Image (cartoon, rainbow, N blue to C red; front, side):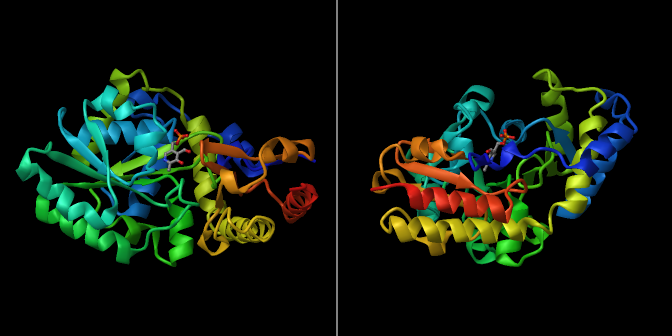
Length: 332
Ligand SMILES: Cc1ncc(COP(=O)(O)O)c(C=O)c1O
């Protein structure tokens, strides 16, 4: 048995997704004529309370287009220290938008923004991430988002939400997805992670923002054609895969407990509230990933200090038990 916990992007499309893909009505999306893409975009915009949406191949492209549309070259974008837009997009913001990422702790946001009066660069955007992937998928609730938005508004800086796993955040914080992004200038969510679709993310925002993002997508060669084939799976993902995310959260918590029982210094299991388990590599046996792999259990590292396991739709209770048994077989 192979238990692939490297990422929630490894999920395979469900039978319902494959059937929807086979039957999808399609057209030329570059001309705005793909009815299935248009439907996915309308559903998404309505779901998150925005005027318009754009279906894209990846979450990275969504983030990059948003940063290009919402910033001015030669300014800073403030984000959390371990934000995906900062650490995991190949310095795309610098290359694509000519901006510099400034990682900050949210408690010091006000002071950081005031820095622009003291020779620090102007800040053109604040990017939040929900859930915070590299922090064991921590969900942000409104009590954490409100002060960021209040300070941002005071400084006249828009807030963007990388909501790659916003449905996990909504579930864990018991908040409607649209409430979690209310007050943001724009947001994106991924269909190809916990929701199990094979491809795709959706960027949502105002009509003029989406028009700008669409034009940039074309400039970058991302103007695809009969994308309805994959958008059809995205619609099925939204309709059928959101409610089951609680199973991933429960399994991730059980795995985190098992890991913490063996290696208590590696993680605080109570921090695991969604589908991601991050542990301190130094507190785990060296080559734990190699030793798990022998038993068919795959994990990953996301930096020199962090080992990560992600739960998703293709991990059953049996797979979870197999992974826990494999953990308990490791000596040391
Ligand atoms: C928080 C976050 N944002 C953005 C992305 C980028 O998504 P994609 O892999 O579709 O480019 C990821 C991918 O893992 C992510 O975890």
